[in-house]
Image (cartoon, rainbow, N blue to C red; front, side, top):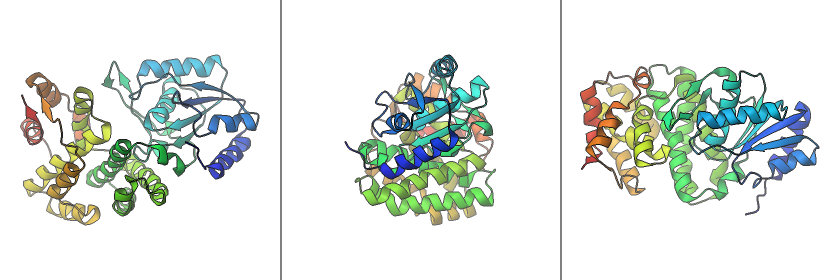
Amino acid sequence: MKYNNQIFLDEFKNKMLEINPQKVLFVCSKDYDRYGYRKALDEINIKSVSFTSFEPCPEVSSVENGIEAYKSNECDFVVAVGGGSAIDTAKGIKYYSKLDFDILAVPTTAGTGAEVTRFSVLYRNKDKESVSDYSIIPNFQIFDYTTLKSLPYEQKVVTSLDAFCHSVEAFWSVDATNESRKYSKKALSLFNDNFARYIENDDSTFEPMLECSMLAGKAINLARTTAPHAFSYKLHKLKGFHHGRAVAVSLAYIWKFMEESNKLNELMKETREITGFDADGFINFLSKLGLFDDLTMTKAQFDETIHGVNIQRLQNFPLKLTEEDIKNIYCSFIDVK
């Protein structure tokens, strides 16, 4: 597929000429120059070396290999082109190396908001080991929305649902501020106006959906995610669900639990206003997208899922959840065989 993204490549080249690094570590997928950013560096005579050896769920060991590539090639700047995996790998390289270099991110999915957050979602032997530090927020961003055109339908669905969940969770968070809620509301407005046409590959939705993802990232950068993300990781690991799907399914039934508690009526009213859904409406929305297929687990998997909830992520959730609550929420959407 040919990308008509020259305006963004020109913006990138101008920024890189302004920065004038000696050598760039180019963090990207193996299909690394499909958008033309590596070639753009060649065109302006800036040396670069590609680093592609990381997983969709980046392992700390891969980040360590990235640090070695950065050091051995005497790089002094990092460009990350890709979705959350590439950008989180770049941020992980900065975090674990303790080196002082800048990062330029070119997000190619509308979902994670990784280009504007202090978080790097990494794994150690397939168990989540995220890091958080304001110093790893990318210093520069190029919002090349033309890259969204090539995303497959399923990727469009699950990544944009991740942005939806970021917005809602940040809105629910006890750490929410006026600023973070402003970001959440704007992101959700963009989601509501564009999602249905976006997943049908309507070009006019690419720019607003990338903005939705970015604003949702800014919201969680201030308020952090809450219970749905804490619930999602074992679904992702044990069932192989895409992250956005695992979070959205978890959020739907946590939302229903919150409504039924009758302890957060004002928050639930506000949530309905900004999302256009109540919990049942969101469940129906996800069901029409086919996201409740294959929600079965063995007893052993279910027990691992319950005990795998990140309690730290529950500290900024507006309800205190007991172990029995956690079990009941999972039971409401998982069929244990």
